[in-house]
Image (cartoon, rainbow, N blue to C red; front, side):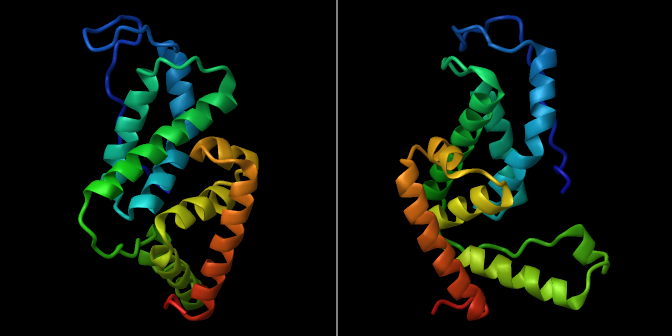
Length: 189
């Protein structure tokens, strides 16, 4: 996956600005390393949630800006990642609430466009994309975090602000609905 023309905002990470009264918790090198390790996953997550690569680009930039200006103490890499995905989830949710309802476009993968994948792989990818677009947003988020991003139930719970038992139940329902949509060719059953 290629992040589309996404560039870091040039921020002086060592100074305070008028709108930020809290010093940034990471120096520039630490932030760049963290960004390099996480940006592709966050962008893919936002793209899957929004169905729009341009919106994913905008939300990615806003996610990292809010992450940098956060007043929350962030202890360790795992805590930073959870907080980053929490910000991304909240921004995507806010965008979803503001936008008018319109169908999600089917994303085109570079390998598929170039004809390097078989027709069967294309059919499978289209079925999955159509089924994901028909899932309620919350179920789409749960499935993406669990299976595309490989997060544990505890990590998903922390990212979405839910209890672990709730994640297990909601993910079970999401998997069942997703499987039903796949069996019926992406059409609601």
